[in-house]
Length: 249
Image 1 (cartoon, helix red, strand yellow):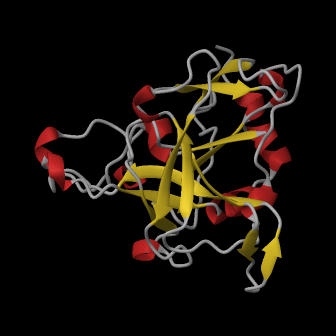
Image 2 (cartoon, helix red, strand yellow):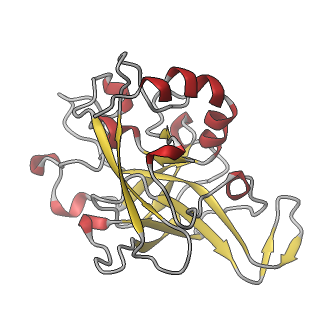
């Protein structure tokens, strides 16, 4: 089992800044499977081993990708019902995303959530760039959405009920869904005195833009990056080098 998030959530900085993480651990909530959404387990996970090695992975081909995978040892938490997780079948989808298609970003905008059931919110947007192309040469695309703090690291999903067209341009009559990528940031550029952050989900300097200057666009890093990370993951080696060297506190 592993968690997927943004690089800047783990470190506090954009990948290109090249700075050490602000903190030394992250806190996760992992929901059990089953019908009761309130059954959530909290886990604290260190960002470095006792030897100073990172406990999380990035895509080596695209070092600027604001994406991170955190493999989690199963013995960290015990579940009555194993949680539901995305797998590669959600990434190896047969639908063809297109500009203007509706997508959902599942997260916690400005911290909003269902506090009783401990559930995230579904915000709706639309694909705003050619999803088959890499925006500005990076494996990402844009969505037209009112993005806010708390949405970073959210899965970006699309689904169909009824007729849709697959990659062979053939119509199909069944439900289909896909994990298109991971939402990372608002499409903003800050003051040139600092490296470009592209509007990470951190504090936004008030002087950087006027209230009406928001393009209401967000970057989504493509799910294919996750496939490449998992394909290059040697789990036994990772277990020996990382899991066996985790801090005890």
